[in-house]
Image (tube, rainbow, N blue to C red):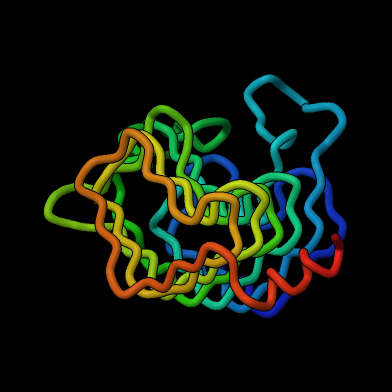
Amino acid sequence: VQIIENVAYDTRGHCFMLEDGGEHDNSFIRNLGALTRAVEHRISPAESDNVPATFWITNPVNTFIGNVAAGSEGPGFWFELGTSVRGASALLHPKVQPNILPLQRFIDNVSHSNNNGLQTYPQSGYRPPEPAMAIFQNHKSYRNRSHGVFFHAGGRLQINGGYFSDNFIGIYIDLDHSDAIYNAVVIGVSPAYKAVTDAMG
């Protein structure tokens, strides 16, 4: 499936999403998600729509190019990768373990004004098989309330290029191993953001 040049505004729960973790070889290209809000009631305790992601990714074997996540109450891009496929798709993919699959392509995406810009979570972590690295290429993450990037409990993740500015924490690597950061620009407080905050007193 190709999801190309769509706009989603003021939505509740996860917005652009891969449901069960068996979905693969789909392309999300130049989509915009803005103002992603939490649901008031989850349909089951297994769902995480109370912490909504504009792009909720349960299988990394998909392509994300030139998308923008802006103003989510939760993360902009969330790789929530389990150790098995869930839901109705589980019987179709009994041997698939999403949290160890390679990342297909993640290039030129933008996350701003979210809680976390880009994150991998929860405890099962994301660790693609050796010698592969999951490469997040030329990602821009700025003015997020918490982290620009939050990598948790995995490894072999690579940030290559990109711009990270005006986040509470730029790039936070927690319990991850063998990660790498190359050619990235990290700015604590940009002159433009300082001018805005100074004007607000």
